[in-house]
Length: 569
View (cartoon, rainbow, N blue to C red):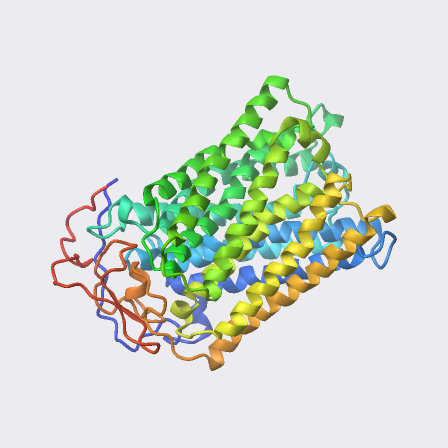
């Protein structure tokens, strides 16, 4: 497929700001503007995160004492099922690809929109319908299967499993459509002069994520449909009562869900690549290695699902192969971390809010990755499986990685999205509190898990009470930090100073348009340049930010030049 630049119209009036043009409800509800769709996704996923976070605090409050405080065992199971399902399916998976990806991908390409704007809007409404269906089903009578819907729990419980899994099925279509849209957009709408190895690394991460979304999500859809069919029609697939095999469900589920881990973390890695380069004001170290590592992670992600099932009963040779592949997937992740650190070396590092979140990501994700080695090793996994060690590892990767990377990206692109600068002092305070609260929450869980504390238990022996109390206090500190971060962003909307087009000194195309961008993103055709070349940037002052100035007009092509020629691959 040739990558041919489109012919965007730059005739939109200068005053046509996408935020204020046509303010009515229908203008947003029926919009085809990728920026508005991205912001609607952002509001949706942040609302889901808020609900899941409140449920997490309820769980941690219950666990302050080893005996019952206010939740019965069944209610506890229902709350942690709801917390996990909302956090995974409604926040972590769509947060960066659907929200930030929708806003940024076309602008980073110098395009006016995604390849299929109507499909993009359809994806958002599928997410809304799936979320409503999913939440209504789970809140109606309660569901206690855990967010994985493991059989035989999900085939024997009286809860609304069929309705909840159909909600997951609809959400899967939203994910597939979003991934397909991004693949086509990046393939066909790169401007002349932007070859594959001149794309921003966020686009590489988005592209790799989209491949996983398109190839892996149908497996989840088929799995939940089979589960619903078995409950309704009593077909023997997973239920031993009908000659089914519950372990088959685990194979199907994790064949999707381990690649889905990288749907969650790869976009965050793409964000950190941008943050490290821009806020070190230095060209990214090892660009091609980071780009190739994104694709490698996507490919490895399909080969390691079995490490979730070392205790489920597999042949010894099979477990050894899965263990070896699990260790192998750490190599491309380590490449990224080392290259990010090397990017900072001799760079002009600014320890602002964005950079602090980026450094927090590296610290927390590294702990998550290193603790995964114990779970990938056959001998130690058998002892640590289904303990709090797994809970801590999972949260260091998903929350310490995805959420912190997401927050860093929000603060980084917030001036571009809203045209407002936030308060740096309070932004730094929010990051510090989030970092301390997160570690206070989950570091004690590593200790609990190594001592044998099982996960998903509402009651525990008194020996673990002190560690549980530390974890619970940390959870509330983390909640305070996240609340402050939200307050900083919302405050900027009303009291923040006007943002210049390029407040940080970024060299990628999104910093060449106004803040916020006009309706078709660029008032004049942007010039394609090296994504991490900072030499032509000149600082014009706090109110004007940075300006990318080429010594001669011929140094970089504009996106409207040589439009009939395909981009070099």
